[in-house]
Image (cartoon, rainbow over the protein chains, first blue to last red):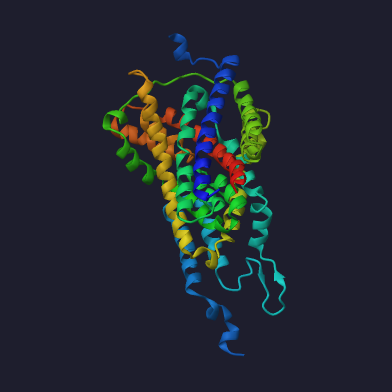
Length: 47
Length: 382
């Protein structure tokens, strides 16, 4: 495979891969935070 | 015995050596006077001077009389710490111990900017290939766009160790120059109205269990999807686990201070062993420095444009200030501070720091993931 085609494929897979990873981490954070929620700060409690 | 025998260095020094000694001095000047990443640029600058004096004992060389290899201390450090990837990994433990992931829990969506702002890495890989670099060299140059010194060192020591010197210099210099590089690009890509967008703050605490689970889960997910990224991500997350577990405070402080300081000294001066005139004073070096800038510019472009794209789908009042997108690069906390200051210049009552820090922490994860993906992908195409 010529280097330019390889670089283009790496770009496509790489950028998609990073977004997929980050989206999984995003879901993980939401899930963890739901199972082990933090305390709301006093100002928020007042609301 | 004549003068030449007494002072062989004076007769052997070339203009390339003198250029490198000047570069070393400039790096020391920038480190001390301008405070541009002094922890790395100063040891690298001093090391560059040491290794470019002919017949230096700092790097290994063949004895012209006996033909035997004479080991130099800096070459030994390089072989032990960088060729084996130990120094960058130890730095990752230290960085992990310094990172507080709690801002991400307050606005996890901003994590995605840490992905968008890695665009510069891949754009630069394509540009480097077009300029004639092979794929491994191009990947090593592209990773300058990770805006994360240890990741750049880790990837380039694996794929293009002969380019490690210029890549490290470019990576650390541009990280220090983020306040100069990012604002004009952001202004070019955004309107005043966009820069004035205010974002709602989320005030809540994050449970300790969440902060303990996060580094473990990230390591497991990264390991399952891209096992070759485990060292890179795992060491970072290990450092973070030491920080968050709450029972290893002494180790956490040691990682953040003593470990970081010691390894940084060794890392900087070991990289200098690659900055010998024959390898550094070349057109390639100038191209690498130029491509590094391209990487940072397109990182910023990627982050800002992604924010603008997301805003198309968000209702009025929930829109994201597109400047936040630029914080998706890993230069922490520099980038977050730059964006906060830009926001304050437009509107003194617009406080973007919290959001900027969240995106910036996302960028730290994103850059390591990008490094891991490149480590996994390049062998498949070469």
